[in-house]
Amino acid sequence: MVRVRFAPSPTGALHIGGVRTALYNYLFARHHGGKMLLRIEDTDSARFVEGAEEYIIEALQWCGIEIDEGVGVGGPHAPYRQSERRELYLKFALQLIETDWAYYAFDTAEELGAIRGEREAAGGAFAYNHEVRETLKTSLNMSADEVQRRIESGEQYVIRFKMPVGEQIVMQDMVRGEVVVDSSTLDDKVLYKSVDALPTYHLANIVDDHLMEITHVIRGEEWLPSLPLHFMLYKAFGWERPEFAHLPLILKPDGKGKLSKRDGDRLGFAVFPLEWIPKEGDTARGFREDGYLPEAFINMLALLGWSPGGDKEVMSMQEMIESFSIERIGKSGSRYDPDKARWFNGEYIRHTSNDDLVPHLQHELETRGLKAPYEMISQVCGLVKERCTLLTDFWAQSHYYFVTPTQYDEKVVAKFYKGDNPAHLAKIGEILASCQTFDEPTTEAAVKSWIAENSLPMGQVMNTLRLSIVGGSGGASIFAITEVLGKEETLKRINNALEKLPKA
Image (cartoon, rainbow, N blue to C red; front, side):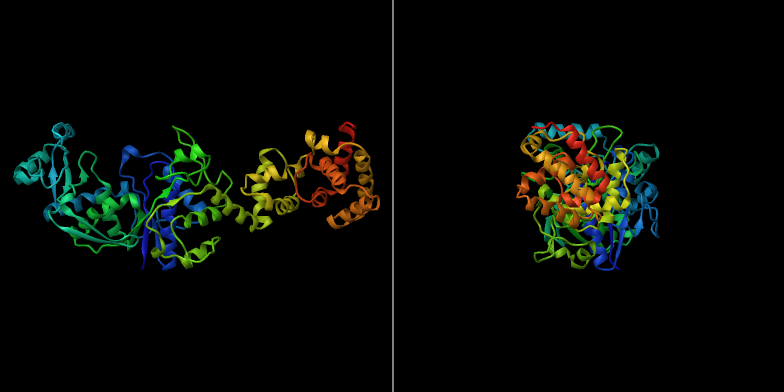
C-alpha cells in the first residue's frame, strides 16, 4: 500500500508551498488507494512556536486534506510528534556507530569556530568531512576507554555520520530523474546531540519514515541537497528506501525567487491559507479571511506545478485525485499569479449554490448587527454572486438590500434627478403600489409599459428609480432588487428619495 506523510515543523504559519506539498501527497495517496499521515517534526525546540501545530491541523481541515493517520487522528505508529519519540532515536544512532557508519565528536562550538576562522583567514573554507574528522576530537582517533570516560564524565558530544570517500551516489527522483553526487564532496552531518538528547532532522526523519512504513517521500526541492545523506542513511541501516519526489518552488509573481510573506505584504495578497496571529510579531493575512473558498484555493494551488493535461482548469478534488500523477509535475518553479487565484475563486463562487453562500453573507450581516430572513439572503446571494470575485465582495455588492439608503451618490443625483424625473419617480411609485403581484416580470412590465406609452427616455427614468432604491447606480436588475425588497420597502425607499432629494 502507498503510504505518504506530510511532516511540517511547528515553527509558524503554514506557507502555501507547504500546503501544496501536503496536497500533492494527499492526491497521490488517494489516487493509489493509499494512506496519508501527518507527523509533526518538533525536535528543534529553539524554533518551536506556540499555536503552530493547531494552525497546521486547522489549515489542512479547511483545505479538505484528510489525514488517515497521525497527529490528531492516532494510528498504529503513534506517537506522531517527534518530541514524544525522542527516546528511540539514540538507539539507532548508536547502531550506526557500532557498524562504523557514524562516530562521536566532542569538539565544542568555540573550538570549531576557531578552526573555521583560521581556515577563512588563510583564504580557505572549513568543512567537517573525511579530510579533517580523524584530526579533530572524535572517536575515530580515541580509544574506546577514552570515549567512554568522556561520555560518563558528562562531556557534551554529537554523533556524526561517517560519509564514505569516493563513492558515486546514484539516486532516482520521481520529478528530476537521475541525480548523481560524489560522496567526497559531502560533509559529515550531525545526527544526534547529547546536549538536548535529541536527533537532528536527518536521523529522525529517516528513522520515522522507516518505522511508519512510508513508501513515497514527496517534499519541497529545498530538501534535495539532503537526499544524498538520506540515501546513504538507508544504505547504512540496510533498509529499503522509499521513492523520492522533490517538488519545484512556488515563485514570486513579479520576479525570480521563492514566494514569501514579504512578497504578499508588498503586493497585497495572502501567502498563508489562514490568518496567522502570533503572540509576537506581525499578523499575516490568510486566503480564508481574504474571501477564498477552500475548493478554489486548492484547485489553484494544485495547478502551480502540476498539469493534468488538456485545457481543463476548474476541477473538483475528486477529479484531481483521478488525474494526479507525479510524472506530470514540472521541474522548474511556477510563478504565483494573484489575478489567476481571484479568477479561480470567482469561478467557484458562481458555481456554488445560493444556500452554500448564505453563511458567508449572514456573517457579514451579523458583524453589522443586521438580521434578514434566510430566504432573502439566499435570493440576494443568487443575484450578486456573478459580480463577486471574493466572498468579501458580497457585502459591497449587496448592502443596499439590507440597509435603506440615507445618502445618495451626488454624481448620480446631478445626472438623473432633474427635470421631470422626480415626477416620473412619483408616478412609478403609484404604478408599483397598484401591482397585485410584486415579482420581477410583473413590476418590470408595468413600469416599462408606462414609460414606453409616454415616450419617456428609458435610461433617465430607470436610473432615477435605481437611485431611489440603492442610493446610486450599481446593482442587479432593478426589478429583481424590488422583488427581494418587497412592495412595502420599495415604496418606502421611493418616498424617502422624493422627500430627501432636492428638486433641480
